[in-house]
Amino acid sequence: MTTAEQRPAVRPERIRDEPRRPFLVLATIACTIVQWPYSRILFRPVALALFVLASIAAVGALLPWKRLSPRRQLAAMTAYMLLGSLLMPLAHSTTATALFPYVAAAAAGGKLASRRAATGVAVTGALVAAGATWLVQLLSPDPAQWPWWLALTVGLPVYIGISHRDQLNALHSSQRAAEEAQRAKESEAREAALIERGRIAREIHDVLGHALSGIALQLDMADALRDSGREEESTAAVRRARALAVDSISETRRAVHALREDTLSLPDTLRRLAERNAVDFAITEEVAEVGAEATHTMVRAAQEALTNAAKYAPGAARTMRLAFTDHRVILTVHNGPATEPRRTELASGTGVGLAGMRERAALLGGTLQAEPTLEGGWTVELELPR
Image 1 (cartoon, one colour):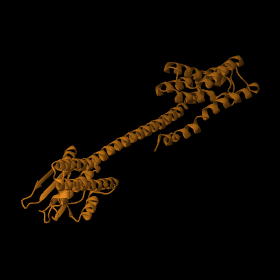
Image 2 (tube, helix red, strand yellow):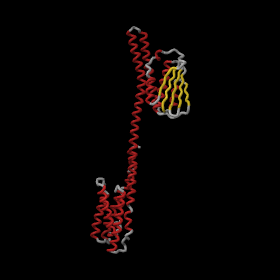
Image 3 (cartoon, one colour):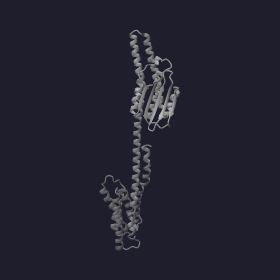
Image 4 (tube, one colour):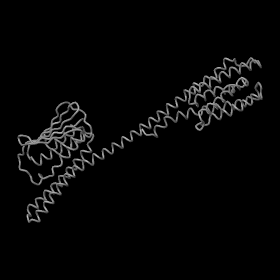
């Protein structure tokens, strides 16, 4: 999920909700203006002044208040609430005027960051509305006037404003969390890509470094033999260099093929490798999950061990065993003594392959042991943490 896909989850809520308050405020002002000439307004000059000031405060409360300090926000919202509370008993005959303190209380809950301050504004406005209603009823009794205790309800909408503010804050928090998660995911993807590039670079380095070093050595030897007049041996060294080049091409292709088979599990990959090389393969203990880096290192070690066995012990029986413990995985490649003559064009090499595997195993917290056996064969054992 991208950041652009997450934001609409908040925007529709705001689109549905934000126009409500402006519409309610403007409708209240407009209806009051329309009803004012035909309604019984008590203390008309005072009521008109209160209406004008309350209207200005109501419109001002619709504007962004980011530049106002919390103290000024509290003062402005308190003035808005008090003006609406004082206006209500004077113009009670107009239907819309009574909405001023209710809208002000809801605005206080939604605009003020402090719940305590918003509640204080609403309570103060309710007490002022009740007191003003009681006083106006004494000065100018009117059967249609609200009872003073009903005026106390003007502060209740503050909880609607607070609830709405909490909802928006929760939506914004979830949006920020989603964006942070997306950034973390992208960072992890970049890190994984860098690790994968490093793994591919090490793989190609191991394959080509081994082959090119052997080719350079054979060509140097061929040059030295030719200078000394040993043409046949020089030609044989050139042929060995060519054989190493062909072998390095095959190794590189196998490496690229292995890099493309990351979705295969370690047992499946080794089983395919064993089938291609006609090697006996078995798994001991129950198969467990192995990490990608450990899997790749195991496959490369198996390839290196089988290649060395084919070079230095042609015709020998070869076996490959994979074992799992609670926290580690063990690969053992064994070959017996050679039963066929060595092919000199394949037997030469630098011997850095297993050394590179040993270094890679150490980086992963594992070990690699390669040693001859009593019967004349060779065993390579790689142990890595899972």
